Image (cartoon, rainbow, N blue to C red; front, side, top):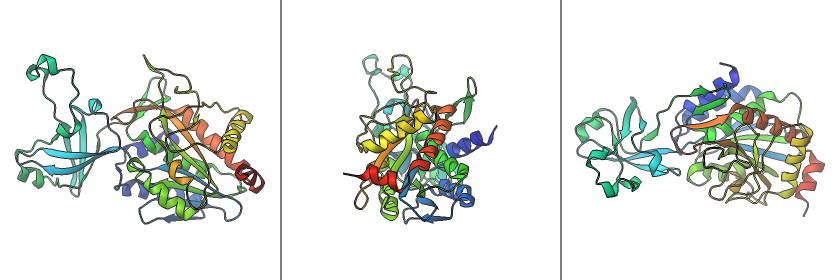
Amino acid sequence: MNDAYKLLKTLSMLPGTPGNEKAVARFIVDEVKPYADKVERDNLGSVIAIKGDKGPRVMIAGHMDEVGLLVTQITKEGFVKFQTLGGWYSQVMLAQVWEIHTPTGVVFGVTGVKPPHIIPQDKRKEAIPIDQMYLDIGAGSKEEAEALGVLPGQMVVPHTEFKVLGNGKYLMGKAWDNRIGSAIVIEVLKRLDKALPNQLFGTFTVMEEVGLRGAKTTSHLVAPEIAIAIDSGIANDVPGGDPIEQSLGKGPQILLYDSGLIPNQALRRLAIETAKAENIPYQEAFINVGRTDAGNMHLAHTGAAGLSLCIPTRYLHSHTAIIHHDDVEHAIKLVSALLARLDRKTVDAILER
């Protein structure tokens, strides 16, 4: 397995729901330290790797957290109740295996589901509400569950294996939303081979899935003039889907809009011009429901020119999502080439009103 795949695998498999990103942050700090002039943290736990001290302030960010669950209570029979963290669709949650992370290790559980034999025929097509779900950890009582180390407040993540599929470029794993953005920011920092005409703030935020919270605090610290979020996007190139600008392997998505950002049009045009000049494939997608960290990043202080770049992803917010490695590589090249163009004159022109 090559180094790029190893990085993606490690980031995918690390546990880190909103508010519990410490393991991810520790790994990222170790990865970026050799390539940054300094690494800072905010009080929420986000990581900021800084390169350069002159020129316009450019912030690129991928969030570290993943969708998951939070233990809320243990029933007297030993079943675990939970709160979702991030947007979950109930139909992808049933009969799935989960990891409850306790101080003494991982406890496995499965989302309980009735077999069809005892569901009335007229009820079988109805979706089961999430608040009626529970995790079965194989405990016979609340006391047995607690003896296993399970307590309210603990992090629960999907139990999934990283797999290389098909022709070797399709990668399946959990947490692509948004360890993929984190991986791209890491690789951009690693591959810088010359000084940039700007100050680069490679940022890894916390708690995006519950309201872009880390993006708010980090952008307040950075005070960016250019703010680019790198996140997962929607791939709809599946049976019954509409693949237009939403396909795996056809390049990163330069978003037209999402529910948190109308991008700066000059910055978006520059991204497209850069992609064309560098022969980098790209797509022009949009997200009607959902937003990226750029939604908060572009509002810091007096404002920044904002843009969202996304990696098309199949089966978002489930146990197993699929990405295409070429899209990751092309995103790294596009961000790197765009950074090289963001000098003082260009940024002033982008911000001109």
